[in-house]
Every structure is written in structure tokens, then in C-alpha cells.
Length: 143
Length: 119
Image (cartoon, rainbow over all chains, first blue to last red; front, side, top):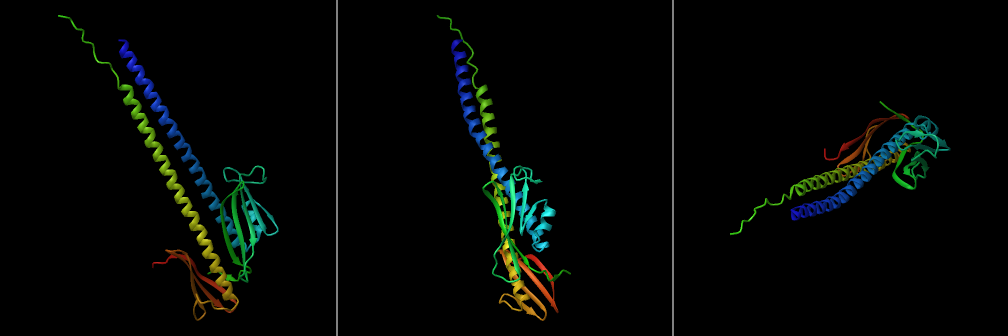
């Protein structure tokens, strides 16, 4: 009778150990997957925000003020600055911002073309960047 | 003759089976979650790369357009009367195809489109 109870207890202890070990490893896996997923979501939103800003800069022929009005950001000279909170909603203060979109004019060799470097960052970490160009005076007539 | 008492074998294994099943479930779900997260990350990275490549090609197309506006005819441009065609590679399988028409001083964009380069 004592033997039977001892065996059951040993089994229970061993299995609890196995479960604890497996659970520790698997929970780490779940946490890692969650981190990867959050990073992926941030990258997707950064790409979307940068693309929006790029198309606006092209459509406004580099008028940062006009682009800032639409994106709820601020314009300083020819630079555009948009602050986003953790839900990617535009906010006014840098203190509330988790993500920052910057569009800064860059040097170009080509005449009649203006360029801007658009970067989206989270703190010091740069999530995404692209360079967009447009004709300085838009002489195009779209059909 | 001794009268031996036959007792039932100890009931072990039930808990083990249950725990093994739980551990297997945990491992399978953990692996599935990890593989889904990794696949999504690969997709996002590829998308980001594609967007970046598109804007590089778009910038190149704008630069060629500016040369045309200045009256130059780069090697990559084909002119048919007042219609100008050129394309810029976005990726090995995609290109940005541009067709412009010049009427006097006015440029008209007839095509500014990504198309498959295999067609």
C-alpha cells in the first residue's frame, strides 16, 4: 500500500517537473513570437506611413505645409515631422509619440527634380526609410 | 502452503499520459505560433523591400523625365515622334513603364505603371 502511494507520488513529481520544463520553453517561444509579431506590425505601419507621406510629398510637389496639414503633422522649412502614438494615431506632442516620421529634403544631382528622404523611427531605432522624388515644377498634365 | 495475497498492480500512468498530452499540445502550439510569426515577418520584410525598390525606380524615372524636360534624350528612352517610352527596373520581375507625350511645352503622362517584365 505504501509502495503504491510512493509510486504515484514519484510519478506526479516527475511529470510536474517535465511539465514545468516544457511550459518554460514554450512560454519563451510564445513571448518571442509576440515580440516578432509586434515588430512586424510596427514595420508594416511604418511602411504604410512612409508611403502615405511619399505620395503626399509628390502630390504637393514638396510643399511640406500642405502635407503636414493632411497628415496632422508639423512643417519646418521644407521638412515634415509627424508624431504617432503606439496605435499609429497622429499626436501633437513629441512626448506622447512612440513613432516619428521625418521627411527631410536631400541633395540631388538631377536638375528639375527635388528629393526627400522619409524615415520612420521608434526612439533611436530606424524602422523604415525611402527616398522619393518629384518634378520641381510639375508640368505634367494627367489625362 | 502459504496463502499468498494477490493485490492489484499500482495504478500509475494516468497522470503521465495527461501531462504528456498537455506538453505535446504546448509544443505544437508554440511551434505553430513561432512559424506563423516568422512567416509574417518575412512577408513584411519583403513588402518593405518591394516598396523601397518601387520608390527607387520611381525616382530614377523622375530623373529621366527631368532630362527629357531639359531637351536631352537619354539612351534608355525610345522616342516615336512626340511620344517617349522608357522603363526602370523595380525588381527582376517588375518594371516601371513610363510613356510621355510632349505637346508644345506640355508633357502628358500616358503611362506610369509597374508591369511584369516577363510579358
